[in-house]
Image (cartoon, rainbow, N blue to C red):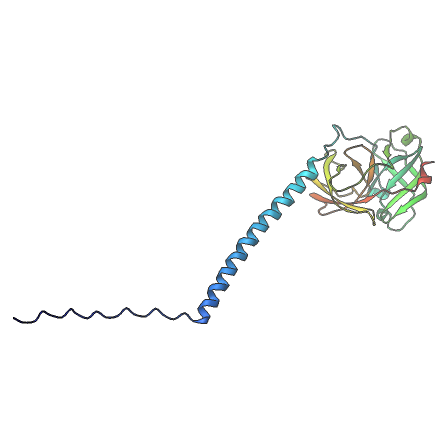
Length: 239
């Protein structure tokens, strides 16, 4: 009887390829990169939500008055710029921007409501781009002035009114503030034409009192970011 056949020899399994140092480093780099990408994405989402919440809070925290205060809009000298009369304590002044006079002595302003020119007398208060000037005008004295409140707060988020020549008051709120320079930036809720508005009033939407003047804008025809000079008169002007 022949012997039984021997079982066939199976080939040993192929050895697993050896892991090189380069492949291990590549895997570590890929993992770290993935973690960083996820982390940056999460952070970006949180930052975006935070900024959006801040803007929403700033615009909604302090509602505007039901109606913006009215005033007599003044036309600048040689029809350049604008201005208004304001009551500081018991005295009235013309408030306007300095740059519209281009270094010349302010002499007169006008109004669309009466032909008589408003004679400008003496500059009693001057800031970087803001003037308070005494004046003579019986017609203007008959009009109700805007008022300045020494105690009115000015801070980021404060709602304000802007006064373009066309279209009526525009709502906005303060987004940036530099008290050391008495400057602020206002974001308007809708674009408006800002050409010729230098020196027009910026009024608190909480109290209706003047806080400053418009000095510049990011676009003269469709302005949304407005530069303002905050009015900081000395106490003796109110006496």
